[in-house]
Figure 1 (cartoon, rainbow, N blue to C red):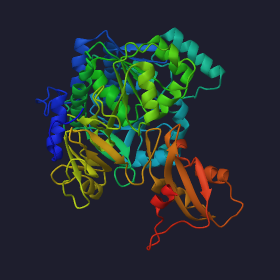
Figure 2 (figure 1 turned 45 degrees about the vertical axis):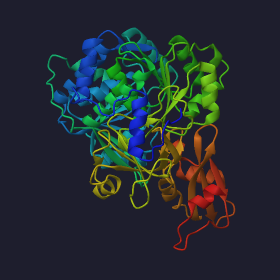
Figure 3 (figure 1 turned 90 degrees about the vertical axis):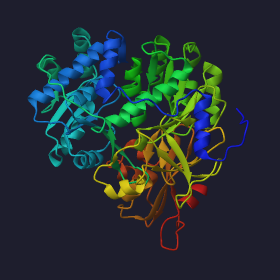
Figure 4 (figure 1 turned 90 degrees about the horizontal axis):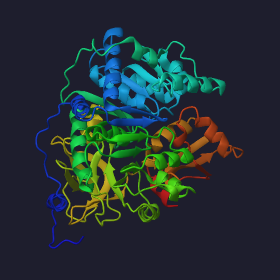
Length: 560
C-alpha cells in the first residue's frame, strides 16, 4: 500500500490508516457497563453454543454462566469476601479459569492473574502487595500457596484438579489414573472447587451492580520502569478492548457465534485473557484452550480434530509447530486470522506460516497498561514488519525525550491515549504519575514510528526489558537475586536473540571465585525466580563496562 499524498502529522496518518480499512475512528457509546453484561448478552444469544474446550471436555455458554453463578453464590454466602476484594487465580488454561474469573466478577471481586510457575518468594510478594483475600489454585501448585499462606492476607484457598468439570465417570477414571501415577495432590486444608460447585445454587445468587469504573483485574507487570507492580484494569477498560478488538477482527469476515479460536497462550497473560475472556466471549466463539502448549504432539492432534478460524500465538509457538512432522496434516482451510503478540515476530517463521497455511500472520502491539491492545495489522495489509493500525478510540503520539510530538517516520517514544489505558498502578502513585500524563497519555517506554499510511512500527522494546516466549523479564529483578551471591562482584542481565523463545536471558558476571560454574549460579537463583527468568547463557568476565557513576552499561553488553 502506497500513500497517494504526503502526510507529516501522526494523528492524521493514524486516521488515514483507519479510514482505509473501514475501521471507525471512534465507537458509539457502549451498551455494556461491565464484562458481566458482555457474558449475559452472549448467553442470551448463544446458550447452547460451545464456549470452551479443554482437556477433552466442552462447556457451552449456558453452563459457563451457571457454574460461574454458583461459584459467585458460594463466595457471597459461605465467605466474608465483599465487593472490591481480590481473588487470585493460579492455574493453567483450563475451563475452570473462566468459571472462577466470571464467578469472582459476579460477586463483585477483582481478579489477580498469577503465573502458576512463580516461586514462593514471588507469590508472597504479589499476594501481600495486592492484598489477596482468596486464591483458586491448580492442585499441582497448591504446596507453594500453602507454604506462604500464613505470611499473606489470604483467608480462603480453593483448589481445583484437571478434570473437575468433566462428567462424573470420566472424572473418576482420570482422577484415579492421576493418583496411580503419583500426580495428584491432596487438598489438605484447601476447599475443593468441586465441593463449592455442589454446595451452592443459582437460585440464591444476589446480583451485584458493576460499573465501568470498577476494578476487574490487577495485572502485575514491570510497567515502563522494571519494578513489579499491578496495573489496575477496570471493567470499562476491558469492555473497550472487547469492542475495539471486534472492530479489527471483523475485517476478516468473522461472524458472532460462528468462530473457533485456538488459544495456546496462558490465560494469566493479559494477551490471552483479553482475547478469550473478553473478545472471545463477546463473539460467542468456541475457544480451544491448550493447558500445555509445550506438548506439541497433543497440540497438533487438537488442531487436526478442531479446525480453527482464529489462531493466536507468538514466535516460539509458530516455530515449534512449523517444525513438527505432522504439521502438514493439519487442515487450515478454515483459518481466517492468525494473530501474533506478546513478543517480536521473526520474518522467517511468519513467511513460512503464510506459505504453509495460506493465512498471513497479523502482528499486534500492546502492553499490560493498555489492557493490552493498542494496534493490530488487518489481514493481508501488505505491511510486513508493522504492528498495524491503531484501534478505534485510540490516539498515537511519537514523542521525543522532552515530550514534544514528532512527525511521521520519525523515531521516538510511543504514547497512547484511549479508553483501554489502565487506571494506574496500585500502591505506586509516583510511578503512575510518571507513566500517565495529566491529560491521559500513556508513555509506553517503547521506541517506534508511524508511517504516512498510519501503520505503527516498533524499533526498540523498553530499553532493558527481555521478552522470553512472550513474558516480560526485567534485569533488575534477576540482578537483585544474583548480587546476593557471596562470590559475585558485578552482574548484568541482558536479552539476546534466541531461535526458540525470541529472546533469552544472558548473564554477565564478575566473580571472585574462579571455580564458580554456570550451574552454581542457576541453582542459587532457582528458588526465587521462575524458570523462564533463569539465565540461559552465562559469561564470566574480568570486568564489566561501567558509566562514570559506576552503573553497568547493559547496552554495551548487548552489543558485544
